[in-house]
Image (cartoon, rainbow, N blue to C red; front, top):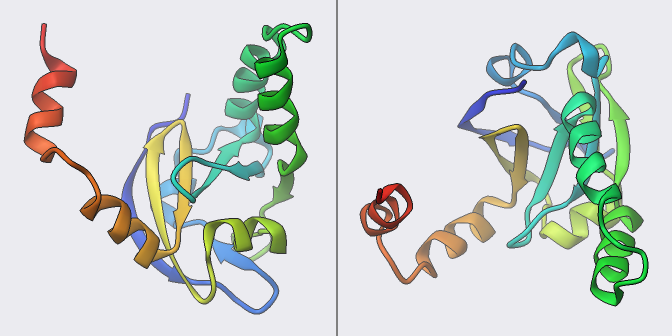
Length: 147
């Protein structure tokens, strides 16, 4: 089970490769075999799952009903852009151009550890996302952790 956390600023090279920070790599299990699944995330970011975490998510997706139009749409859209990438010798993964365009990523990225996944953001898009939140972090935390 992964436990990614923290934020890291990096650049992306001309071939669409980004480094996975060492502090995040240490949480990638051996079962992932240095392989990640990259997909469209929410709020114009990319979600990067180690293969073992992706396999658990995929089991949930398999539970969706193929007779339900919303389930079909979600599954098609999710999987249409999902791609595997293996860490290279310099601890980089390659992100396809279509996914970079979706997230508005050009030369800089913000990498966030979010428990079972890693999110990759255009730093400006992430800042806009934070600014657009109607409630403060403290108010959301209170509502989320309310018992």
